[in-house]
Length: 130
Image 1 (cartoon, one colour):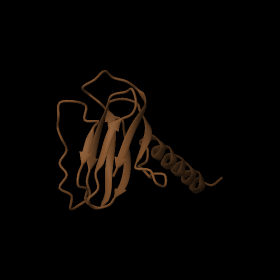
Image 2: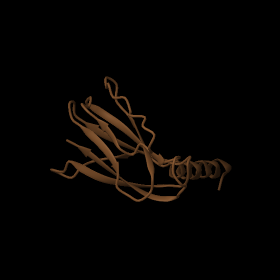
Image 3: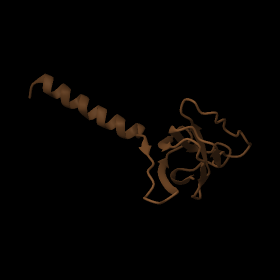
Image 4: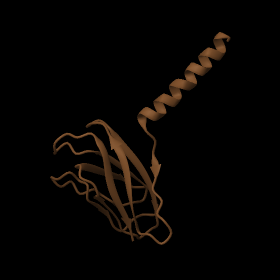
């Protein structure tokens, strides 16, 4: 095998491994007629995160809440034109409400809550849109 081919295969291997290591953004889609969904992910420590994207229409209400047993923090980044400002309460911030929504994609990032005991594993997050 030529050196060029070996380097190409090695580069492809590293790209695939790095994509798996950093995780990918997951789009949240509801079943027909549903107004909520429970999404899951895995975290491996305080520096780990999982990102979701959800598209909502203008004037809706979107809420998030922890649906599992591990303490999580939820950060929501709104699309341009939104007036949403997160509630910076002293808790873990798993409960968020955006009302009214600006139409577009919202980015939801889940991390391990740093105000609770450390854990590693799977989390569950409920997202409602009405």
